[in-house]
Image 1 (cartoon, one colour):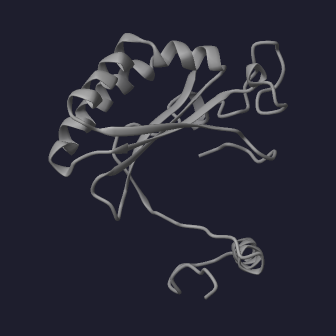
Image 2: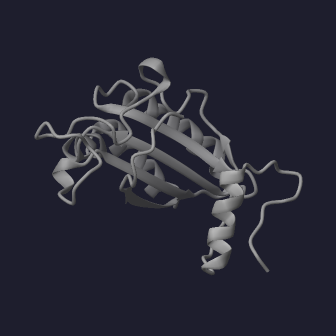
Length: 172
């Protein structure tokens, strides 16, 4: 079976070409629709665009290139596995931390999404100008409070760093 989206979804030529590329190379892929959980848009800074890998790193170089993490923007994704009975409390706790995160000068994106087809699986993603900025965020009081909430409620979470590939624009 070749992987295809449902027939009622419009596919552009580039999408069709990409799906064909995946099928020809026997590459596995999954598609999960995400629902917006927070009221704020993902890119909350001026003009609806954040740095998302387009900013300037610590040494004045354009972020997103090279292999030295100090030269990269910090882009992370966090997966949360939340018992359905705790989802509303989780969303409230996340929003509380997010309200302070959105005030961080070096944060350009911080958003929470829930898989539309799973009632327990949430994804958050964020972007900071540098990994030092991200570390300041991660060790902040508002994120420490969120992490304590997660621990107290037995909510599993996993964090992964993302690296921007290619030169595509990061507009949302």
